[in-house]
Length: 166
Image (cartoon, rainbow, N blue to C red; front, side, top):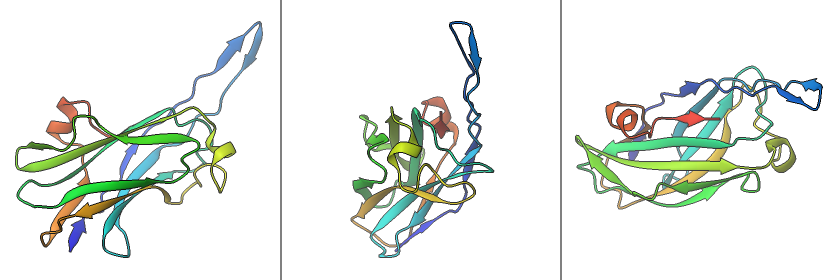
C-alpha cells in the first residue's frame, strides 16, 4: 500500500499578446493551474491530474515539469507510464532517472506540446475547475506504506525540477 499527500501545487500561466503586420491581437491568458497526485483505484499506480482555475486551459501547453518524491528507504520504484491526450503533448521521464537525495527518491517528468489542447483532447482542453487526468504511472516493488507526492522542495528548486507549466 502507498499513500499520497494531497497537496496540489499552483502556478500562474500567461499567454502573450501578438502584434503582426500592423494588426494587434491578444491571446487570452491561461488560468492558474494546479497539479495533484492520487492513487489509482486499482492500487497499482499513481495518477497525475491538472486543474485550471476559473477558465479552461485549451490552448497550447508548451511545457510542463513536475517531480514525484518518495522515501529513499522504500523499495518502490516507478514503472511504465500511460499518458492521456497524447496527441497534444508528450510526457517523458527526465533522462537522469530516479535520483536519491537527502532521504528521498525523485523522478522528474517533462511534457512538451505543439498542438492546441482544444483541438486534440476530449473533452476539448482541460476543463475549468475540474481535475483532468494527464498521466498514470505504475508503482513497482511495493514495499509497504510509502508516501508519494509531487514535490517543490530545496532539491527540486536547486535542480530546476519544481512544478512549472507554460
